[in-house]
Length: 413
Image 1 (spheres, rainbow, N blue to C red):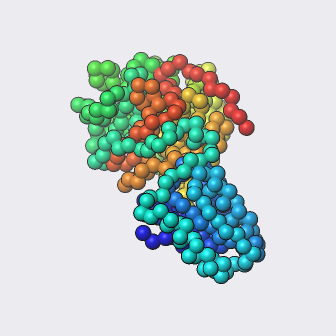
Image 2 (cartoon, rainbow, N blue to C red):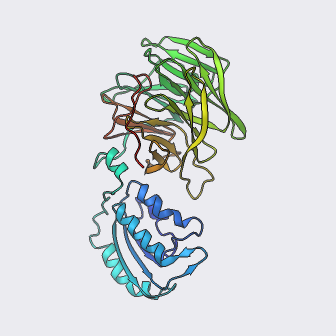
């Protein structure tokens, strides 16, 4: 293994590939507002920590220009790394923006970075309260299944069994409470979004037939709505169905309300690729991801089921290589946190729409597309990641729209 030596944003490569790069030497590191490098300290505070060890160097006479103050930015970076639980060492000097001090320190830095080789670098414990509140210590993502074409449509029934779709093959899979994975003997008609209703039925958005379908406990299929295209679906306790209907990336999307009597009502249009949606725990609000931007939108649900007071709610982080977050499925836990799948992983928002934590997801052919909370106590998160499905135990249970709505504690500022 070769140490990563950098003078500009050194955490990018180790952060993205901790399996290959886990020891970092940063000399006069650039963490100011050049190509967005000033965002890194904030992101590090939010991310679940990775197994990386860092040695920092800078001098008090480093650059102080239009883009920022290198010296203060390095101090900010060091404090962020300590907060996030990383093993960090640093030597500050009085030098300027040159390699003299870093070169002199190089042997010392290498001895410290490689002090216990070949023992791997351990992952630290973050001081981020959100991460402490939701993650079980010493747990990682576990593989549930693989070899699929494109997985989506995670949903949990009242028993805690988990269902997901492989859209191109029109197959539906079930994970029982013992972890056994089976394939349902049905043609899912290229189903994507999936949700369970208060009647115990499983509802799907069948893209192949342009229908909303339901399945009872015996697998009997029924048409809920015909001649309708959609992506994701959620079913409220009162039986109202909400549906996102994107029409490509360029055309405005529609949101549908399908009442229990089958009536279809367009309740909003205009989002750029409206994708995932879910209800707040008390079912007074609807959250919708706008994939072709970095926003999660929120609507207030009216007494007649229609939507009002549409507004931008959650500002999602975007990777350097992307123009938008490409958010997809999302779910809430019973404390009101909102878990949003995106290109950066799972971004966890508080009730005020602020991203407090980011959970990296396993490397696969594509991004994480959807999630749900399953298992006997609904405290195991299942995620679909293109050709694979993973699970992970959490401290908090998810909330189910088919249950009686619950009011979380008021959010704290």
